[in-house]
Image (cartoon, rainbow, N blue to C red):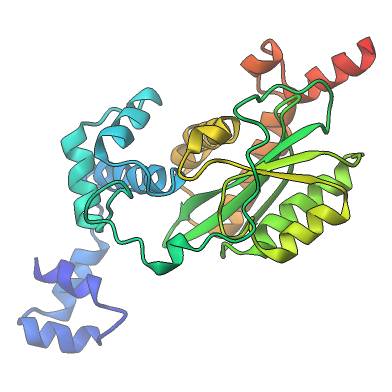
Length: 288
């Protein structure tokens, strides 16, 4: 459609020029742009956000079948063909697909640590094993990046950071918050994936300065960090998809409330016998 084409390129070319080239009136274009979207269009936009978000959450490892399975498991009904159509129109392909282009940088792996957890997500006391990761959050017209640190003992989020760039600074800020909040001892295991942020020398030196021991998931294996993946999935369903934030400030406020008030202090967690992380820590400390 001509109007849609104009909107797609409005940041590149003057609207008046495109209207002349396509033989449409500017007033007609502005009327079209200001009209309310149909219910079908709104559903499509919502599903596109959820598909792209799930694709990003699993770091391009999932194609249409697994993304559809993941969304259906979260009570977001969709078919494999519908998801595949969205991925195709967004130009997204899973890493295990033949057409995925890895590029030379994908094979460069410096500062990779051994996997010390091997999916043993249990811990005998607080601050024995932490896990950390980054997720993508689409807000209005740009990505935000949320880095979180979880204590596996209680599944409490002990540190987090939100920014519009996915850098070493983001993950260091989340870990710094955790260090300020918790009394840690040398030997604390901090587990992550092999993302470039977690392999940066500054981040590794920052961990070492507090006596922490790094641990990393195996290449391309998101289930080596399953508790964090589970937290991100619930965050998306219980907050991000429901609210559909229109500004960064709204997103930051909502994420603060979700993590600090709801998830840590109120939300019941199966790993804790159906009590919140904060209550689990309180009860176990009292019993000790």
